[in-house]
Image (cartoon, rainbow, N blue to C red):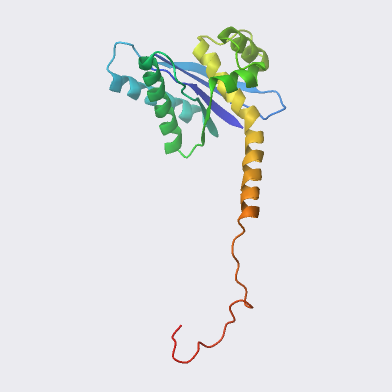
Length: 195
């Protein structure tokens, strides 16, 4: 499975591509950031993020895109910018028919470090170890993007099994109504009625 992780942000949008399957060594395919100037007009910044994400999608052809789920922060302006960058990444992937998944920061930290309260240094250290890198990716946004991709690769099999179990449970509780020939015998319509 090849996953593009996106750590959304207006000034620095971290991107990282990881390939592999759960339970096997993972491989980093690429890592970087899409940057925009803080003093540029919002529309121009969003367009630059879109163009950057599109380049990553063209170059690396991921099967899934994992984006950090935006959560409430005290700084509304930061939340808005993060949400806008997140929406751009989701739009780019969806336009191409690539499945998009959202993971919370604590899900990613727990998947990669074992603790949902890990700090950025701990996440960077584990990403470095898991991908067998010489040094932690810089800036931290890039390491976070790789952590998102790793999280999705590891969580996807369990999520898929859970979705299948829920679908089977729902189907068992609400079986489709089937009509058989004995319930509705075929034959000529009674006189005076049209079929």
